[in-house]
Picture (cartoon, rainbow, N blue to C red):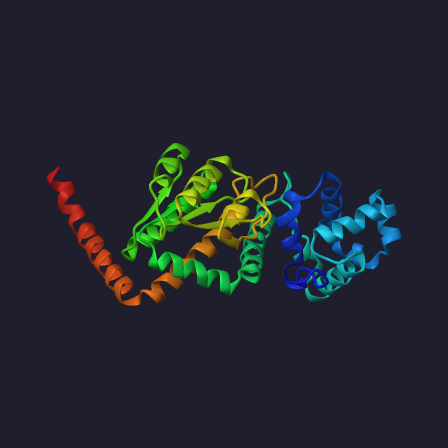
Length: 299
């Protein structure tokens, strides 16, 4: 992406949401107005948008540049292309309201989940994914750090790697994560999972692991975050949190999509050993479950 081109229309809104936390307060207000009504901004001259938003034309230009465009005109053209390529409701997903009937809840949550997956796929770089797959495939060990909802993603990734015979460990406690990070070495991989990219309990161990020589990977919504700066490879997720979804449902499902892509890529690259490990673990679990009734009766 060059400065003149800016983000592509297919993932423009998702990109703006991703970088929103890293913008100045004035730029955040303008970006929020863009997200609220991208069609209106696409139709407005800079003078018109300045009047509507209550900000100066210079601030609007600086915001456009912060979003990756040469100026406001390039931002308008990209927004117009985005509006033309997507239905208006696709650009501005309806937030859940306290009085929404459950039929609307189902529709809105389903749409948000689907859009999170589509936006993540649009932003997922095959080259970056390939680099991560290569590093994980060759690693002596893979540590995954995450807390809260991202901790669930960390556990999922470690479990998947373990099923194909790799040494994967999830750490959701910062003290244990830092302890483990201090013992990694060159060739090991650490993965930090954080929607904002600013979670201190993730940044700490990733920083320690980077200093120890490990390859660092970030899974985050914000490509300009502190976590992204610490990472050798950054995989961008595109979930959006709202008032009724602070547990990051869409954020978590977009992170899980990235984890699944990494897992499948690693399983492909190490097919012989991965296939054998999958069959061995499947057989062991089948045998364990078959013996469960007998163990229950004898207890």
